[in-house]
Image (cartoon, rainbow, N blue to C red; front, side, top):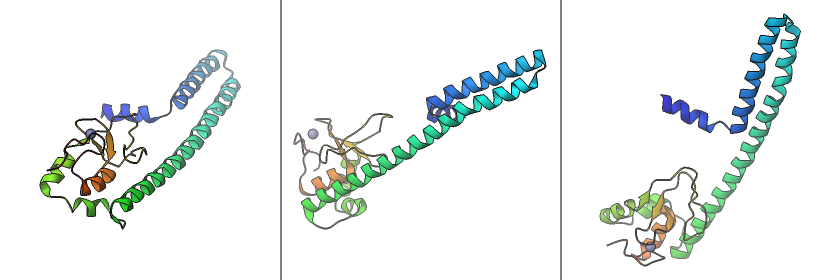
Length: 174
Ligand SMILES: [Zn+2]
């Protein structure tokens, strides 16, 4: 529960947290001054003025998120395009990851799955085959010998033909 709350707060941009804290502080100061001097008009001023930076920061963050989402979409299309190119280079028509996995024995699939690694937050991983960033939702496979990263799709297309790591030639399949 507490961890969920902490993660939720972590996802809020820092600028919003800072401006939010300043806004709330201004409100509290305004409220205290208003109570001491009994000038409630002052409190109204403070409320109005302090919302301006808050709204500006919110608009700025929303625009930034939109640009980032568009950028991620572009990267995803680029990554999918590269995967299709590599696949066609290695064996013709377009297939899904599931279809390609179906061509491996259970034993080899277990070996492939044992190469999968957990994605570390904020770390960027690039596929050594396509040189394109491995995106969220794509599995990252790591060669136990040379430690290079591969997207699952690209390495599977490679391993359909060869049994070794494309970089260091370590034996990955039986
Ligand atoms: Zn290797």
